[in-house]
Image 1 (cartoon, one colour):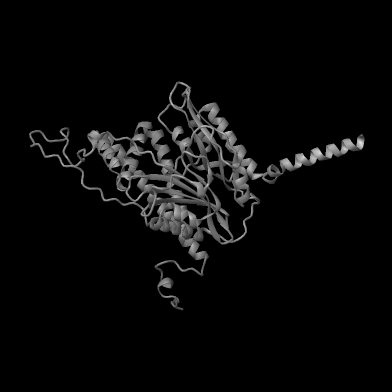
Image 2 (image 1 turned 135 degrees about the vertical axis):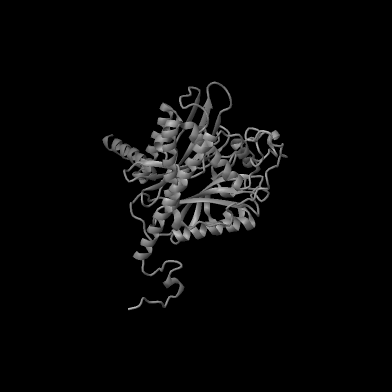
Length: 452
């Protein structure tokens, strides 16, 4: 009886070890990242999503998922009715242990009534020098409640990054190859459409996040039809580390007719020397509503009665001139300038904090509203052009003065970042004697030698 009991105990222990094997295989950085996202969710439940996002995020990108959108909405931070919840179910960490992604279901509800929303999110995290994980990009999709992936997401991620967080990455820095892979995907998308471009650039079994369905295989993804040949890409930035086997790119897609737009995130994995898309998340952009009465609204070049000199004749109203769109399709931003873009983002955030502290939230909101509307107008969005006209018309002189000072300060910070980046790039060329600086004497004439 004792021997039989020992065999039973050993069998139970073996079964327990087998069940815990997947968890033990991912102990370490993956567990730390899941714990950080779980604490993030708990903080949102305790103090509200606004405070939680302020403490846990270092958002550098313009891609904002449903979680971020609900957190940045106009509802007060202390709302007792609105509640944002999410449950981290899977994570992956790169070979360095400093870059990772988390995913899981989310729910946004309103106890006072109204519709609730559910879906899945995809967040990109980076571990700071102090060891703390911070969200640097947040995106996601909407779908009906109760929809679950056909395969557990942790099992999917574990197949791609099975030995994570070792702290050392094999191979050389692959950022140049990543840039070429991203550019080739975008060019193929413009020629043949999103589905065909991803079919070539994505790895087998890649994971797709699309509205109205759970995350699943890219081959079965729905919602890509509007982005056929002629799709324009407005690329954002790349989030990666030197020699890492994980990278994230993001930006905005625009259909050929301009009627559909989508925010995208692509999670890449380096396989030896090549980069392949492992996960792609596209979510349609929700355009702001512009009243029909404002279509064709007079442009600011018309003299407002408020500023018309007394006795001056009534001038005919002139409508806004045709917008010359400058979409960033076909414009490639090399990854060597990633540090410059990071510096600009960081300094921009500091300017925003100074505006809030010294001038108040109202001025900060005015600056942000004008900035986003101007960007949209430059991209050729008629709604943004109308919004910019409405915002700037009849603005008081003292308000305009404060806005000019705010934007001037930001441009000064951009100029400072450019000066620092030029010094940074020059030092890189000096340390690498095999690569001459562009437009220098050695690059123009390789046989040139300084006089003795």
